[in-house]
Image (tube, rainbow, N blue to C red; front, top):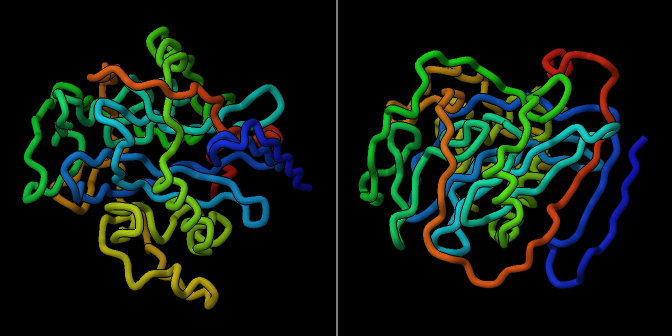
Length: 305
């Protein structure tokens, strides 16, 4: 049984609408995939995640490079968390500092706390190429900080916070960041999610946790498979025929096929990024929440296979 509850917190913007969906299954584990290179200087990486549709279930929203809404702002990813009796999705947001995202290791700089994939330097964003993949023909603001890489890699694909998943708690600096002024997901990010939900090959029930499109270089741009290869002609265009291209296998956690792209699941010593310029006045809105009833006492990883 699926329960859909919709309440409008404000009529101003889509990001202020709270949607709750209750089902009896937790989100799948995070797939391992190779990050495409950053296509435009100044774009920031937003990691892929499992979203939920009341009709089709969980579907993968590809990781994608996007334009930040304001200079000096960083992306705090959304996350699923166990909330007493249900799983709740906490929507991501933009802000001057990185907040709590459940301790979930999304990879490529988002290692559970903070962000180590880059930093703001004045009006320019600098990329740590020890962690993220950039196109050096168009991106020149780079540096290398290998000290953030932990060679004792522990692969962890947990996709939610709570029993059976990640048990991290918010750190003081993350709690402080949550109280700051935020900007909700941009129109491009919302469009990106809306495109994903229309593609049957992105649903876990169809791809067994291996989405055909794992990542994209930009919204409405080129699609990439789990292995980091360019995907075949858009599966979205052929969504009705059920013949969407699917990746055959996920790469190992530590061996990305693109020699310029670090493996997504690499453990990195987390740091908390300080933003650069003071933000203007923005409403500090409550994140979108999607509530899911917990699955009965089965280990999270068993549920996904």
